[in-house]
Length: 148
Image 1 (tube, rainbow, N blue to C red):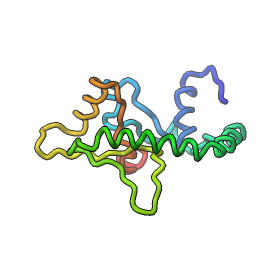
Image 2 (spheres, rainbow, N blue to C red):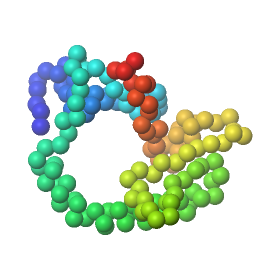
Image 3 (cartoon, helix red, strand yellow):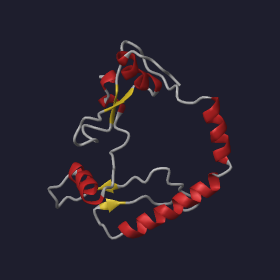
Image 4 (cartoon, rainbow, N blue to C red):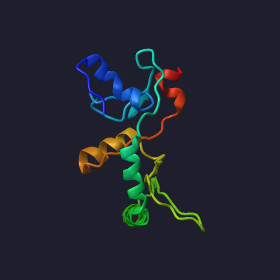
């Protein structure tokens, strides 16, 4: 926990805490140019200061539920795959033989060469028409301000 009465410090702390990641909450299209950026924070190189002892204890307790949580995600992913399997423009996650996907994320690849729509149009439509928030995750590191 961190407290301060200095607004300038308060703005910098979240980025310092999480590898310099800063979001763009004021953007209409929350995912453009991408969900977050990594930048130098007030002359400080950020670090990942996320976990403490209490969080570690909760994590240990969660490990006892790991099989249940993985199976739940697998069931939900199966529903998504079944519902989206006929959308030819989407490449869905799959399980190679001998492996079990736990669906920490549900990445899809969108490709429609016949459409003038792009991935941003798809994200906007999913959000506006179905209230589904999606993001292009993990942009290349060289896109981040800190590394330019």
